[in-house]
Length: 503
Image 1 (cartoon, rainbow, N blue to C red):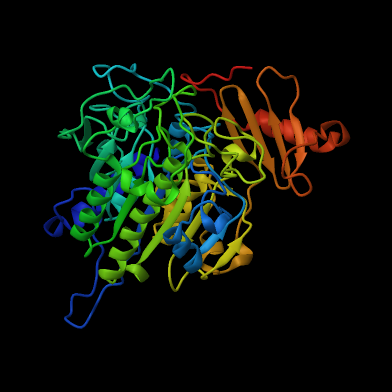
Image 2: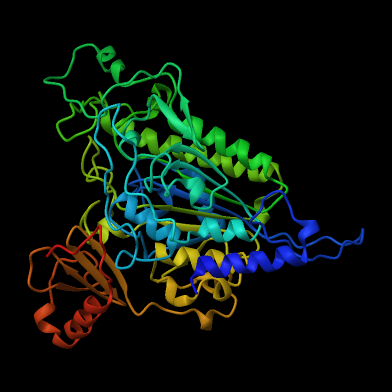
């Protein structure tokens, strides 16, 4: 019996018993509660999951950034738990989001790489390979348990009218970019609200990948790469409105901001604290910018301010203690579009950037705050990845995941006991973590990390306890470890119609 069938039968049984008490949302399960005037049913926790885009391990102050400050993300770290060995689902956007929402690593996930369904022109079909309807997302499970669900920001798992559209994957409400290519421009001609195309007045179409032959003498020459409506501003406004509208019921907000993914675009007022003099002309993709380092710092700072607005709203609505807030990034920092990961020490001491399965491409910040439940200011070395988020949230929301999703249907393990300090001895550990991307694969087996580059006969082996920079390949010195690693490579993946392993 499939998970989707199990959920459907559960809902049907509740419907028979409680047919006259059903709510307006048809998939909602209704709890039996004491209705006497003095009773107050326990509220399930709200969940806000904030996902930055291409933000490196060291690109927030609480993880060591020194070129700019992120005081609101630091608020989360000061009042919550900061993880030091947490990993994204992939070194690129779409598969990382798939692992997050479905609880499967890229050896089993439906989407294992970016897969475009259209081209770059304004009239091209939008979207990437749609997430299949048969896949079960965390939003679907929470929705069936009575949560109001919302996704805002960048999607990348299916375009308009596809089975992968957010409304078809468990989200009651959606607003943002459906297509990752469109998201390369922060002044797009349109965004999507549910199935409706929302045109943005004052934003005219221009290509998000252009070059200049030389730096123009007049700074106004860069104005053609701007519009009147900045997409992240619209997104945070939508999120704040949605939270206000659902403050009286448990809610799940997946806030997937496109920041700080290139192109480098930010309103001028955010540039003032960081202005520099070295222009970027577009020679490494995306759009030119007169002050690229300032633009990047300003983009992250503005995102931090948006997060602060969300946290302030929780305070104003007296929901802070009832809300679990996650903050993380979909992969490591990028190398193109005028960004300067070396200047910002974006990946810290780790090797590699985005598109790499070395540590710099996949080790990311992860912060979780839940006042009264998660220890404030804690730092934790739990070794986990995006596929662990689903079972963790199900545990924190007190859903019976075993009844609706057998453990063998996902790769994740819950780290709820690590977060709450309840029965820490029961915290399970992964046998291994696995990634694949474009023919390159990686496995982390406790302190050991193997990277198997495409077209190579054998993996490289690193001991992260002594060599976190992955600088010394010790595969020949540890044949027994290599034997264990190779057996995991053999068993870690299933075949994929869309993503065959290219060696």
